[in-house]
Image (tube, rainbow, N blue to C red; front, side, top):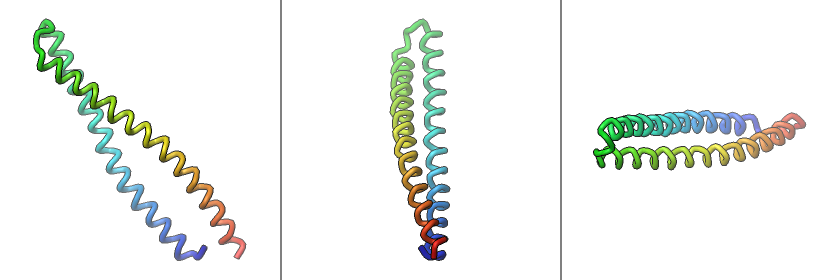
Length: 101
């Protein structure tokens, strides 16, 4: 592998990491926003004597949003770990071949 190609790969990975980091921050913020809505809705529902169906529905929807986002993030982490392992393997092999030249 030529050094120029390797540097371009590094730049691509850094850009990807920054974009992914921004996206991940937004997703995590969405989970915590739903968690706050869940807490507020449950508190209002129970404090209101279990009478406010709207607060109960909001709590249910917030819990479903949390479950969905958390599952998506968990699955993404599993995939990323596989990609990282493959990338590490490829990088170790390509750096070996670069050093041999």
